[in-house]
Image (cartoon, rainbow, N blue to C red; front, side, top):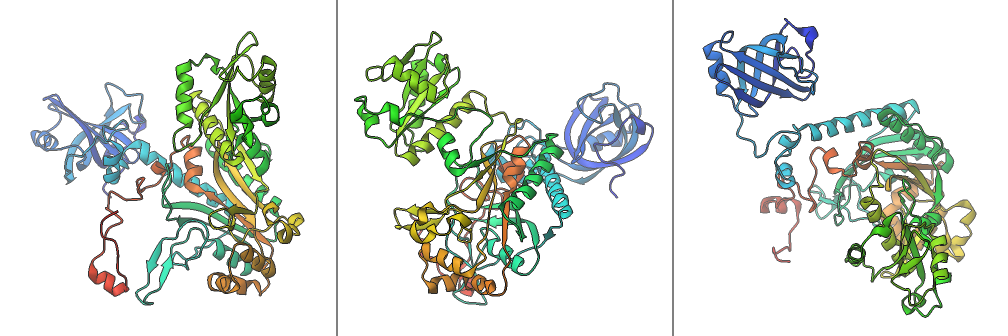
Length: 586
């Protein structure tokens, strides 16, 4: 062993013990007659001391040859520290060095390995192995590990079986693009990396393993948005002989277990909200309910007042920003500019000040009386001192735009407290959504989601009104988990493929293995998958998943540390029977 103790465990109880520590040199201070070395490992920092009365000249020479991040082994005696440091667990002691062995030298790091580093994100991503030595990153990875262990403990107690499913699978349509892998042994054919283990977990249910889970890597080749990764981790689960309520109870239990274990919080039953209600009240299907600012629809009372912008629109809806009547006209203009950005796409914003004296001042005073604006305030639950912000347009678009504005206002007002947790189930999603470009239905979740039993007759007459037997778990405005009861009847599954535009031949080519398995006694089953990276980050008070992934990709999907993806040589291409048409030009 290179050490008898770690750099984070020695205390006054160890005084006079002879110990051996190993780690990295964090800092050095040389006063000539005395030297101090802060030695760091995963567990903490211990101060090493040399002084000319008790340390040899040769030991000083070795110590003075050290640089930052050198890997060394130190043997010495634990003594009481003269100037104690209450900020670290080892702050009452130090090691009087008797021997220092250099295990490995280090080049000068490109940034300081400290909690508050001078390294920017790009350079830290390039040298991620150095970034991991920093407490903010190291602690997040350790926290992730602890959450994973608690997940396994909980699911094991619920009699779930952990099963690994293949990573090289068949490419199937729907969802995001697949990452594909050429097969050398099968020229001209390709594997795909799984977007999720969906079909395999259904096959495991047919195989009789009635409670399955795994903490599994998933891959999606999609255009990256902020805080997205092309590879991510799910807690993937499936159960047989269950209904929606059974699954929601089991996995609400898992969420409660993690919130209690890591945050000390206990919850009664999580609130539930239908998809339609979430869209009407908050404009999206993953609402942050830590604060109010609910939508107030005023279409019926705002039209017909000769304000052409409103009269021609499908939906008029607003929110009351609490206490924001103090916003200056310049502040409001900045909000208008914010919603007009391409990312939001709004054409404008109507504002109404609700003054402390009960009067109203707005950008549309020419068209609306004080009584009209008072009726708006009632719909939006506005109070004196609030600022009402109103948008209009196509129902789906304006809800999305106002939802984005609601979240932006909440961020500015400090309403999104990371230490407050507000879980919520969203249920009764539409089974299908119509795509104008392709002029066909797409599955809102995936093609294996079961319709609500009471909506089954609508499949033939009005598919767009069919509700899915699906459910999402939302935490602090983030979808952290989602799932559904699956179709287990081959005739209903065939009808679903038909609605999604598959010919019988296409369905057979893509999903024949699953349809064939359904012939052999498929049980009723359903499941849920948690977004593990996001759940971990929210539990730890962050909404950024990157630091909870050991070796993440950047916003372009690149690993700048190992320089991937990268070209392969011509010999490899020939061996795989592939060629590239890319010329290097956009």
